Amino acid sequence: MKGPKIMESRSPASRSTKGSITLVEMGRSRVVVFTGAGVSAESGLRTFRDSDGLWEEYRIEEVATPEAWSHDPVKVLRFYDMRREQVLAAEPNAAHQAIARLQEYFDVQVITQNIDDLHERAGSARVMHLHGEILKARSTVDPTLVMPMNGPSLRLGDRCPLGSQLRPHIVWFGEEVPLLPMAAAMIAQADRLIVVGTSLAVYPAAGLIHYAPDHAPVHLIDPNDVPIARRGVQHIKEKASTGMPALASSMIEGISGR
Ligand code: OAD
Image (cartoon, rainbow, N blue to C red; front, side):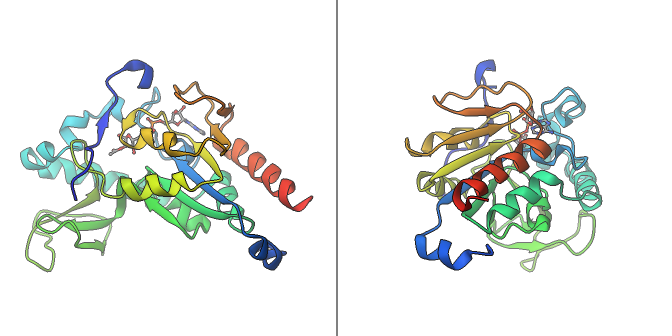
């Protein structure tokens, strides 16, 4: 499928319920939660662009592009092996848990730029990974051939059933984002959009917020300033682990009078 390719923004400025039957009958409102590295920061996974971020230590061109893969696949595999090791050692935090709790009351879709599985481990049932998943590998000849990893690392010589080298199941810079149209359609149907812990510096993902309908409240949870070119966004300037549970509680109180 042809589509927009992933790239960093060039401009610095854009750098069950217990009452579930009743809610189902009423029609649950649709909540999309769009997350970035900040939601996993308090689980010990480094973000990319904060002062201690991964892109301070590594160059994108050397580890996260198709050219890097052609030039030095061992270096690329080592970089993602380290990411995988850290993800396996991490645990979901209060933000992941609050997002999962929302699905007891709302029709929730998580769209994440993260490659970790912390939303799933916290219990979120519907999680779309726009930029891939670190615990999966994929064929280098057939991008639809995606499989769970058998062990913690990928090596040169690890092959897919078609006999080609396996690569990390990651969308690299310069590659298309196959799930983007589906993500845009989900956000266009949302009654509420919650954006958590993303610098909105990477396109096309960052442009997704513009698909939210005008009537849908949009909340942004991030302790830092984020350039968000949409009016009426409520910026909750807190860390995800405090901002997200507080927002979830107020949303739940709003519908159930708790
Ligand atoms: P960034 O590192 O660009 O942004 C992380 C955001 O999280 C920043 O806005 C921080 O202020 C915020 N943040 C930090 N700590 C937080 C906390 N405790 N609670 C809430 N927010 C916090 O990460 P992303 O926006 O996710 O793609 O980056 C987007 C993409 O760029 C990634 O998916 C990755 C990266 O290159 C690929 O590698 C393909």
